[in-house]
Image (cartoon, rainbow, N blue to C red; front, top):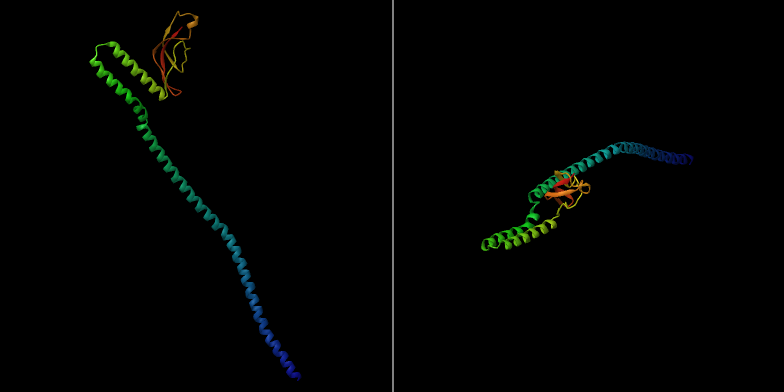
Length: 196
């Protein structure tokens, strides 16, 4: 019986031994897989920042190309708009003065029918008044010269008038050609005679 017991025990140890070896092999393979996984994860972590940086570079390149293309389109569009503005910028002003041109044509036609110069003068005065109102509506205004101090920003001295007295020194005596401003910019200086 003892032999049987030993055999049974031997069989149990024999049976246990292969199981333990397979367990050890499984554990070894798991350990090796874990070590490989940890090595792979370390490598992937090392490779991942590189791949991430390359992806960021590619994305930034795409953004730069997009912005360059967008700016180029903007530049072309503004050049086109500027060219159109130069060509058609006076359209608003021309449209505003066409009725005055019509009035002048009517005055010429009616002037041929009458011999009264007073009627012609009155018609011209009305046309001039309408024209000045149209110019003012477009932002054009006369530069004031009556009893004004001489100002080089507004006036151009074409003559100096001596002997006018101390109260007229440096003052505008006479306006030889009217000056105009468009909004606040001088578009033509007034030509004036200045007291000396």
